[in-house]
Image (cartoon, rainbow, N blue to C red; front, side, top):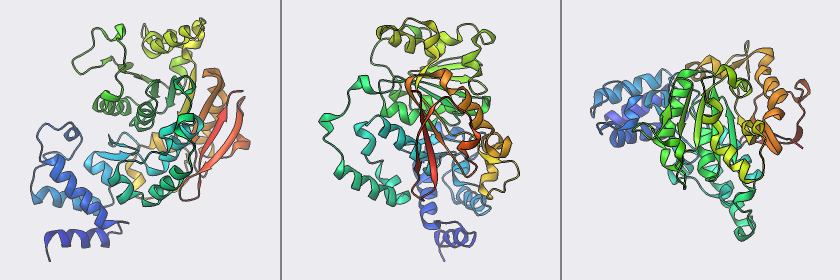
Length: 371
């Protein structure tokens, strides 16, 4: 039996759902990334990663112990890109791509039906690829698609984690600026690394005087706020940093939404209060009840990103209660939901629009609008 056959057998015996696919991913990672010195991904990869069988053996052993592959390799594919992840962040999940699809569909964005990179579709999501191809044949004439003025200009993500959601949306909406908030400083560090890794999609087409004095990495930052191109990351307990700028470091709102305010003035809006309002707010908040059992691999995710009080509804109640204050008229709130979701327990001034199922047929995303 060859080493690779032995590894495949061990992964299969450990109950890994797709042992052959994961082994290919491990070998590809080792070949393409592990052998490169100085690769940015190596900042979270296994310590001392070298091009030898001993390290591959270590990876296989950890995976057989049901440590998530993303946690071992330090990154995971999501939508059209790879994103860093670690023990301080929730790993990007295929189910969350439903939220991206819903946001694109809300604005009838032409790229909503574009295919993701081939290896993600063919190796991990063949059923989603088939669905996309089917939709692509029935979409309307792209020439009738809305112009830039119809796209969201300001996007807020609550609980930004790795940043995979808001970075993916900023890539799809090149005219938008974004703000991502998280209570976890460690999660914000990962989001910042991902933003720097993908900073080419965050560059603005026009000169930005506010980026004068930026560091050599192409970002401006301190302990509470960092700005990378079109994305600003803030430490905040949900909306608090935007609601109470007076308790934040000087210039927080200038940092966070300065370009948004400039855009608003262009549209004839001169009320300074509107600089903290958004066209689109998204979130995948913690929604697991504190007494609920989780699978073995989820135990490697941070509890802060998983569990919520009040039978898993605490975060939803806060977001739905306060979102109207931070949405522009006709703005959308798009939330990922889990089994704990119960709209009857959440009070909001927003209008319920629809619930969207994921590919497994589970209710996954709910949409509200400020009317």
